[in-house]
Image (cartoon, rainbow, N blue to C red; front, side, top):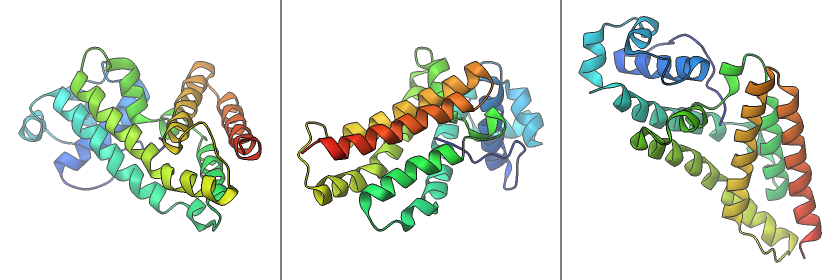
Length: 207
């Protein structure tokens, strides 16, 4: 998943500012490299305030994944691809939207929960599970459009709407990794273009 992008805390109480700082710092430098002190300085709060809201850094990581899911859900709920009347066109427009927001600094468009998952999947299962809930929860929002597209095109695929929605997220997360590996966005955007072509072919050839 993409942004919210701003790399400084925007507003809100101490807890919200800490979550915003976690969102930005972890995408920029990773979970392990982000200390409680870093988070407090970025949020403009004391360590006492940190431990008032979070038992430890892991608890902050779990909360940050949930905060990411909440704020990105708002972003996607208001995105322009929903204006498409046809469900397949709406799904394809979603893919276009994901490509469009691959832009600028890596920490502004890469996915917090994807970043944390790659780093902590074996060491912090509570954070891993919170990240999985975010990733798979977002994928589930695509399923109704995919199911409607299957029905409207009269196809009988040997794959499910759920599996295609999850595959879409796998490609997007892989695209973020490629952007990090190369230091630029073009390879990532190419991967998203291939995803769109793949989806178009699925709905043309599965009858």
